[in-house]
Amino acid sequence: AAGRFRAMDTVALEAAIVSDREAGMLPAGIIACVGGTSTGGTDDIAAVAAVAKRHGLYLHVDAAWAGSAMICPEYRHFWAGVEDADSIVFNP
Image 1 (cartoon, rainbow, N blue to C red):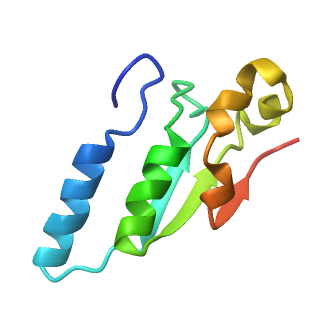
Image 2 (image 1 turned 90 degrees about the vertical axis):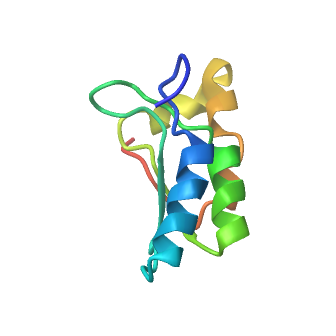
Image 3 (image 1 turned 30 degrees about the vertical axis):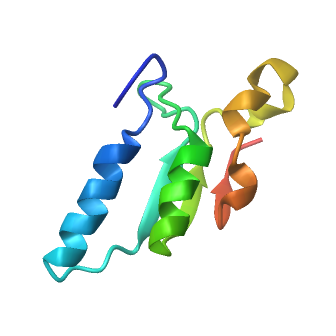
């Protein structure tokens, strides 16, 4: 986790994908989080989506805990890049 919002480290993510593929494994996809239940951790969806696109991986955004807050203008910036997700979950 990196930074104030405990976001996924996309450099480490990309390195893990490359390492797994070199070891003969096949990553199934990436799950980004907007408001992790325990920590409120929020990933940079656009940055994670860029990694998913580069590697041809499915991207799911888990926003079950904080996704409904994205209707508020002051939180919408956390949603940047969500249009590149393959699936999303949030609880109203």
